[in-house]
Length: 557
Ligand SMILES: Nc1ncnc2c1ncn2[C@@H]1O[C@H](COP(=O)(O)OP(=O)(O)OP(=O)(O)O)[C@@H](O)[C@H]1O
Image 1 (tube, rainbow, N blue to C red):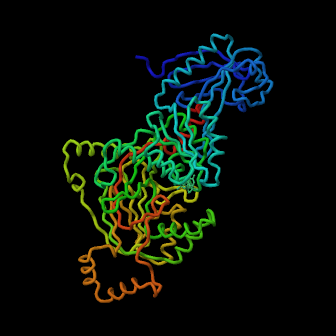
Image 2: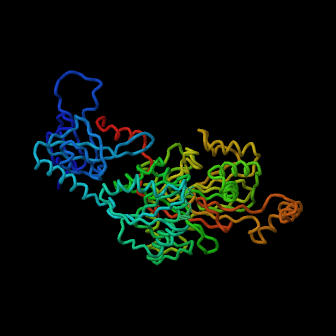
Image 3: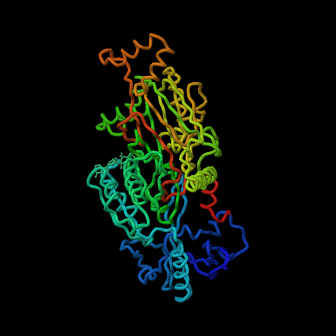
């Protein structure tokens, strides 16, 4: 069998009139400048470049016009060719590849090689094309949904100008649907979409649009696999199609957490090279009735109230979140209820780790394996109480906020996010309980989302890594629960309840709402279960700066 590093081609070719030794192996394309003089030249550009084949976007033979220096590109546009770039009638080919820029951005770079003979040029082009065609993870056909009203209403323009040309260059065929109404994409995916024709689904929009896509895709997968989506105890079947996100919304939190930047070109390149990032999805039920899926934040209390209030102020644009945030902070409502949860057992990592979920995360890999082993065991043993072999814990109290973060929820506004050490694909969610405290203390907690201090290192905040949880607001608790509480707390409690039920007195409301990835849920009593690695994105997680720098400057490797 051939070894991965085996050399496929080695030739002396020219790049900008300089001689280079160019080699092609199964994993790398390398071009190294031939030493013309032994004199040390510190300011000369790097002498050696390497590009992983997996990051080559396309290769094309230069046409006659370009060879003759007329400078016409394949797509009909014109580009400037400097004198040194003129190819003087010799045959040449151009390789487009991923180049890393600052802040996790990717760009498409090009290098043109000039060959001494036509046959050699053809051999190079066909060898590189053969290698690219052998990458089975690369999508060939994509179903694209564009929300024309997301964010600044630039979705269509962003796709047409920045993304479609790259897909065409990489030879990807597309079916594009511009949505006509909210939930158009979800409904199309649930029923009409011929999914067998595609290798992936692309969402051009924000987090709300992404949520539509997963609701359509996850639902469709369950129906096709015979799983009842309304049953909270059923393990959901993973979706086979990957999802790409081209950010064109207002916050684009999911894109930021999985790619490290909100940049349409970077996202398009991750799709083209066929990246794959698994991701957990939480199902949210109320009494055996499916409500929604969530991938980022479920928030009751503060974050639920901010969303509810901001929805009434849509006309204010993005400023509505800040205004509602300040208003809800000053209002300082707290809510009573019971949280029960199933802690994550036998897994590595805690919500207070210093390490972060990054590309190739070992915590996700380890915990994901444990979860799939358990799921297999469950399948073979069919143990009805498999889940209950863990111990449910219960906390009753008054809370300013109850948050479940299935990912860090980092975004440009809050670079650390609500739970900085949360993982994308470890099968858990971080349950954060902020108990009733003074406004000053709550402000301290909120400010820690933006600075370096540990936001959980406060007496009134607790955090648990869980695989399932339930919440019941106080006034949904059973009569016997309430009687017990009243007996415990004495007569004063009865008057407080009467007061709360009486709107005229203007005291705090008894219920908040759940903010589920930016949508308001219709019920407050919910049952949430994490489904490990239910979906996959065309992404690779945020790359560590070290990896990033090494690959950006491969000659240094
Ligand atoms: N054609 C359409 N007309 C009206 N609404 C639509 C249409 N297509 C999609 N939507 C809805 O628009 C909502 C918002 O879209 P999207 O998430 O793309 O942008 P955003 O809200 O500005 O960004 P973010 O969610 O990142 O803050 C989504 O909930 C989606 O269901």
